[in-house]
Amino acid sequence: MNFRTDLAIESIQSNKETISINSDEHRYGDVTVSKVIIDNQEISDKLGKPLGKYVTVEMPTLTEYFRASDERIKIISDEIKDLIPKKGLAFVIGLGNLEITPDALGPKATNSILATRHISGEISKSLGLENLRPVSVLSPGVLGQTGIEAVELISSIVKDLKPSCVIVIDALASRSLSRLGCTVQISDSGISPGAGVGNKRPLINKDTLGVPVISIGTPTVVDASTLANDIFYEHSENFDDKKEISCPNAEAMIVTPREIDLLIKRASLLIGMSINCALQPNFSPDDLQSLVS
Image (cartoon, rainbow, N blue to C red; front, side, top):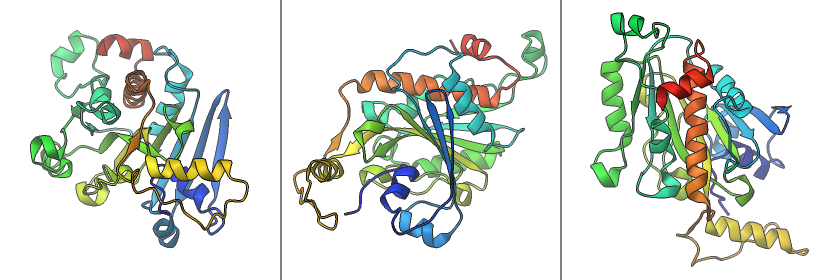
């Protein structure tokens, strides 16, 4: 069975018997950071993941309260810094549908991003903000709302703005309920919107945009048929892993936790502030929080 997941770490775990790939793991208190580099096309094809670096940050559930100075923000922002150019305009994109809660991570996160491209010259000096990095922010909506593919809209703007990088935020799909709301994936491989839930859209990556594309997301849903197979496997002592459960009624269903509203709120704030800290290292998290409030 082709288990649907946007997380590289889950794809690797599912194929650990047939592939060999080096990983680097560090613990920071109750936060675990895992890093893998997929640099082999054969492994990339087997995993269904593009070539690139993948960073997975696992932490306590995002439904817990956190402050602007939270250690999780520092950890995630440091990983983002390692993947983006140090200077130049950064273009931040929030993918997803604001009207569908599990898919609203990207648009909601952009509300926490500090847009600064318009702050320059005497205005920035008078406000004491002359050290701000230029940042532009966009939430392009979805094809069903606009009739325009996200990559079409983004690429047309990139041609004019000529940013040094594009940072794309999107909700992800996991194969495990235990990862919802407590995992963040960061990658320099770009993103294929909707791939985790069977609605794959055109790629948004360096090849399509011509600039580095960093993707950041948190899993908010699990494919129902994938979940059913995992539950059956976990609770069956005699289950042959070559067998698959037939779940025709679950093929078009997506599972999400009942506290999804709170999860999206916390995750969007966490990712938004982490991006701000990565892009504006000359300002403290508290200062950045006051600027976007």
